[in-house]
Image (tube, rainbow, N blue to C red):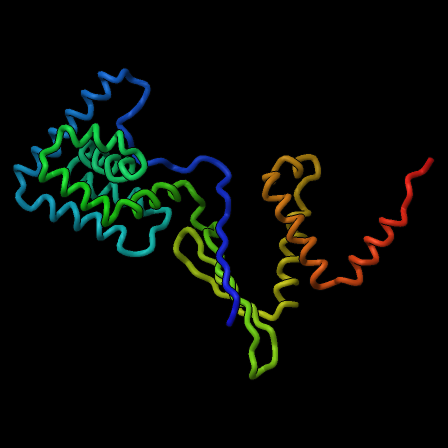
Length: 245
Protein backbone atom coordinates (compact mmCIF):
# COMPACT_ATOMS: atom_id res chain seq x y z
CA UNK A 1 0.00 0.00 0.00
CA UNK A 2 1.23 3.54 -0.64
CA UNK A 3 2.40 5.55 2.32
CA UNK A 4 0.54 8.80 3.01
CA UNK A 5 1.31 11.93 4.95
CA UNK A 6 -0.03 15.45 5.41
CA UNK A 7 1.83 18.50 6.56
CA UNK A 8 0.77 22.02 7.48
CA UNK A 9 2.87 25.16 7.90
CA UNK A 10 3.48 26.81 11.24
CA UNK A 11 1.91 30.31 11.17
CA UNK A 12 4.44 33.11 11.53
CA UNK A 13 2.41 35.66 13.44
CA UNK A 14 -1.00 36.40 14.79
CA UNK A 15 -3.96 35.60 12.58
CA UNK A 16 -7.20 37.47 12.49
CA UNK A 17 -9.27 36.62 15.56
CA UNK A 18 -13.04 36.11 15.83
CA UNK A 19 -14.94 39.23 16.86
CA UNK A 20 -15.37 39.60 20.58
CA UNK A 21 -17.13 41.82 23.06
CA UNK A 22 -14.36 41.39 25.62
CA UNK A 23 -11.84 44.20 25.71
CA UNK A 24 -10.06 46.44 28.19
CA UNK A 25 -13.30 47.72 29.74
CA UNK A 26 -14.39 46.76 33.25
CA UNK A 27 -16.30 43.50 33.86
CA UNK A 28 -19.43 45.56 34.51
CA UNK A 29 -19.10 47.24 31.12
CA UNK A 30 -18.58 43.91 29.37
CA UNK A 31 -21.57 42.42 31.17
CA UNK A 32 -23.69 45.36 30.05
CA UNK A 33 -22.54 44.88 26.45
CA UNK A 34 -23.47 41.19 26.55
CA UNK A 35 -26.87 42.00 28.02
CA UNK A 36 -27.57 44.62 25.34
CA UNK A 37 -26.56 42.51 22.34
CA UNK A 38 -28.37 39.49 23.80
CA UNK A 39 -31.52 41.60 24.01
CA UNK A 40 -31.03 42.69 20.39
CA UNK A 41 -30.77 39.07 19.26
CA UNK A 42 -33.83 38.04 21.25
CA UNK A 43 -35.78 41.00 19.85
CA UNK A 44 -34.85 40.02 16.29
CA UNK A 45 -35.92 36.41 16.84
CA UNK A 46 -39.23 37.55 18.35
CA UNK A 47 -40.00 40.04 15.57
CA UNK A 48 -38.92 37.79 12.69
CA UNK A 49 -40.50 34.30 12.92
CA UNK A 50 -38.11 32.94 10.27
CA UNK A 51 -34.99 34.67 11.61
CA UNK A 52 -33.45 31.44 12.90
CA UNK A 53 -33.81 29.73 9.54
CA UNK A 54 -32.50 32.78 7.67
CA UNK A 55 -29.46 33.15 9.93
CA UNK A 56 -28.62 29.47 9.58
CA UNK A 57 -29.03 29.72 5.79
CA UNK A 58 -26.59 32.65 5.67
CA UNK A 59 -24.01 30.75 7.74
CA UNK A 60 -24.48 27.58 5.72
CA UNK A 61 -24.10 29.45 2.44
CA UNK A 62 -20.69 30.81 3.43
CA UNK A 63 -19.15 27.71 5.04
CA UNK A 64 -20.63 24.88 2.97
CA UNK A 65 -17.60 24.86 0.65
CA UNK A 66 -13.92 24.89 1.57
CA UNK A 67 -13.17 27.70 4.01
CA UNK A 68 -10.62 30.20 2.70
CA UNK A 69 -9.18 33.57 3.68
CA UNK A 70 -12.28 35.41 2.46
CA UNK A 71 -14.86 33.31 4.32
CA UNK A 72 -14.77 35.11 7.68
CA UNK A 73 -15.28 38.57 6.22
CA UNK A 74 -17.97 37.41 3.80
CA UNK A 75 -19.85 35.62 6.58
CA UNK A 76 -19.77 38.69 8.80
CA UNK A 77 -20.97 40.91 5.95
CA UNK A 78 -23.83 38.53 5.16
CA UNK A 79 -25.04 38.41 8.75
CA UNK A 80 -24.61 42.17 9.20
CA UNK A 81 -26.76 42.91 6.15
CA UNK A 82 -29.62 40.88 7.58
CA UNK A 83 -29.29 41.27 11.36
CA UNK A 84 -27.15 44.38 11.81
CA UNK A 85 -23.48 44.75 12.71
CA UNK A 86 -23.91 44.37 16.48
CA UNK A 87 -25.93 41.18 16.19
CA UNK A 88 -23.59 39.76 13.54
CA UNK A 89 -20.57 40.47 15.73
CA UNK A 90 -22.32 38.98 18.76
CA UNK A 91 -23.35 35.79 16.96
CA UNK A 92 -19.90 35.13 15.52
CA UNK A 93 -18.27 35.90 18.86
CA UNK A 94 -20.62 33.41 20.52
CA UNK A 95 -20.34 30.66 17.91
CA UNK A 96 -16.55 30.90 17.57
CA UNK A 97 -15.54 31.94 21.07
CA UNK A 98 -17.94 29.55 22.76
CA UNK A 99 -16.18 26.59 21.13
CA UNK A 100 -13.09 27.07 23.30
CA UNK A 101 -14.41 29.21 26.16
CA UNK A 102 -17.16 27.47 28.18
CA UNK A 103 -17.22 30.35 30.66
CA UNK A 104 -18.00 32.85 27.91
CA UNK A 105 -20.72 30.56 26.56
CA UNK A 106 -22.30 30.17 30.01
CA UNK A 107 -22.08 33.91 30.64
CA UNK A 108 -23.95 34.71 27.44
CA UNK A 109 -26.47 31.89 27.76
CA UNK A 110 -27.60 33.33 31.09
CA UNK A 111 -29.35 36.08 29.10
CA UNK A 112 -30.93 33.76 26.52
CA UNK A 113 -34.12 31.75 26.68
CA UNK A 114 -33.86 27.93 26.78
CA UNK A 115 -35.12 27.74 23.19
CA UNK A 116 -32.52 30.22 21.93
CA UNK A 117 -29.76 28.50 23.92
CA UNK A 118 -30.62 25.23 22.22
CA UNK A 119 -30.61 26.94 18.81
CA UNK A 120 -27.21 28.54 19.48
CA UNK A 121 -25.71 25.22 20.54
CA UNK A 122 -27.13 23.59 17.42
CA UNK A 123 -25.43 26.22 15.27
CA UNK A 124 -22.19 25.65 17.19
CA UNK A 125 -22.40 21.92 16.59
CA UNK A 126 -23.06 22.37 12.88
CA UNK A 127 -20.84 25.33 11.98
CA UNK A 128 -18.70 26.25 15.00
CA UNK A 129 -15.50 24.59 13.78
CA UNK A 130 -15.84 26.08 10.30
CA UNK A 131 -16.38 29.57 11.74
CA UNK A 132 -13.33 29.22 13.99
CA UNK A 133 -11.29 28.06 11.00
CA UNK A 134 -12.48 30.99 8.87
CA UNK A 135 -11.07 33.46 11.41
CA UNK A 136 -7.94 31.40 12.07
CA UNK A 137 -6.85 31.61 8.43
CA UNK A 138 -8.38 35.03 7.79
CA UNK A 139 -5.05 36.81 8.10
CA UNK A 140 -3.10 34.43 5.88
CA UNK A 141 -1.83 35.16 2.37
CA UNK A 142 -4.38 33.54 0.01
CA UNK A 143 -1.55 32.25 -2.20
CA UNK A 144 0.39 30.65 0.66
CA UNK A 145 0.34 26.89 0.99
CA UNK A 146 -1.90 25.53 3.71
CA UNK A 147 -1.56 21.73 3.59
CA UNK A 148 0.58 19.22 1.73
CA UNK A 149 -0.72 15.68 1.17
CA UNK A 150 1.90 13.12 0.15
CA UNK A 151 1.81 9.56 -1.17
CA UNK A 152 4.66 7.23 -2.11
CA UNK A 153 3.96 4.10 -4.16
CA UNK A 154 5.55 1.68 -6.61
CA UNK A 155 4.01 1.47 -10.09
CA UNK A 156 4.18 -2.17 -11.18
CA UNK A 157 3.40 -1.30 -14.80
CA UNK A 158 6.20 1.21 -15.25
CA UNK A 159 8.41 -0.37 -12.57
CA UNK A 160 9.06 3.03 -11.03
CA UNK A 161 8.64 4.68 -7.67
CA UNK A 162 6.12 7.52 -7.89
CA UNK A 163 5.51 10.34 -5.41
CA UNK A 164 2.23 12.24 -5.42
CA UNK A 165 2.47 15.71 -3.92
CA UNK A 166 -0.77 17.68 -3.46
CA UNK A 167 -0.50 21.32 -2.34
CA UNK A 168 -3.62 23.07 -0.98
CA UNK A 169 -3.46 26.86 -0.78
CA UNK A 170 -5.40 29.12 1.57
CA UNK A 171 -7.52 30.36 -1.33
CA UNK A 172 -8.78 26.82 -1.90
CA UNK A 173 -6.72 26.10 -5.01
CA UNK A 174 -5.14 22.66 -5.31
CA UNK A 175 -2.06 21.67 -7.26
CA UNK A 176 -1.03 18.04 -7.70
CA UNK A 177 2.45 16.90 -8.71
CA UNK A 178 3.05 13.27 -9.66
CA UNK A 179 6.79 12.89 -9.98
CA UNK A 180 9.72 10.52 -9.85
CA UNK A 181 11.96 10.98 -6.79
CA UNK A 182 14.73 12.61 -8.84
CA UNK A 183 12.29 15.21 -10.16
CA UNK A 184 11.13 16.18 -6.67
CA UNK A 185 14.74 16.39 -5.56
CA UNK A 186 15.32 18.93 -8.33
CA UNK A 187 12.32 20.91 -7.05
CA UNK A 188 13.63 20.78 -3.47
CA UNK A 189 17.04 21.93 -4.70
CA UNK A 190 15.41 24.86 -6.51
CA UNK A 191 13.54 25.87 -3.34
CA UNK A 192 16.72 25.79 -1.25
CA UNK A 193 18.64 27.69 -3.91
CA UNK A 194 15.93 30.38 -3.78
CA UNK A 195 16.18 30.62 0.02
CA UNK A 196 19.95 30.96 -0.31
CA UNK A 197 19.41 34.22 -2.16
CA UNK A 198 18.20 35.99 0.99
CA UNK A 199 20.69 38.53 2.41
CA UNK A 200 23.20 36.91 4.77
CA UNK A 201 22.77 39.66 7.35
CA UNK A 202 19.05 38.90 7.86
CA UNK A 203 18.86 35.16 7.10
CA UNK A 204 19.69 33.87 10.62
CA UNK A 205 16.72 35.74 12.12
CA UNK A 206 14.08 34.81 9.52
CA UNK A 207 13.48 31.11 10.11
CA UNK A 208 11.87 29.53 13.17
CA UNK A 209 14.65 27.72 15.12
CA UNK A 210 12.49 24.68 15.80
CA UNK A 211 11.52 24.35 12.16
CA UNK A 212 15.17 24.75 11.13
CA UNK A 213 16.26 22.00 13.53
CA UNK A 214 13.56 19.70 12.13
CA UNK A 215 14.79 20.44 8.60
CA UNK A 216 18.40 19.61 9.54
CA UNK A 217 17.26 16.28 11.00
CA UNK A 218 15.26 15.54 7.85
CA UNK A 219 18.31 16.27 5.69
CA UNK A 220 20.41 13.95 7.84
CA UNK A 221 17.91 11.11 7.41
CA UNK A 222 17.74 11.84 3.67
CA UNK A 223 21.53 11.60 3.24
CA UNK A 224 21.75 8.36 5.22
CA UNK A 225 18.96 6.91 3.07
CA UNK A 226 20.07 8.02 -0.39
CA UNK A 227 23.83 8.45 0.08
CA UNK A 228 24.94 5.95 2.76
CA UNK A 229 28.48 5.74 1.36
CA UNK A 230 28.88 9.51 1.45
CA UNK A 231 27.66 9.82 5.04
CA UNK A 232 29.74 6.82 6.13
CA UNK A 233 32.88 8.43 4.69
CA UNK A 234 32.04 11.69 6.42
CA UNK A 235 31.53 9.98 9.77
CA UNK A 236 34.78 8.04 9.36
CA UNK A 237 36.74 11.21 8.61
CA UNK A 238 35.14 12.93 11.59
CA UNK A 239 36.10 10.02 13.84
CA UNK A 240 39.69 10.06 12.65
CA UNK A 241 40.08 13.77 13.24
CA UNK A 242 41.84 14.48 16.53
CA UNK A 243 41.94 17.89 18.19
CA UNK A 244 45.13 19.81 17.64
CA UNK A 245 47.43 20.16 20.62
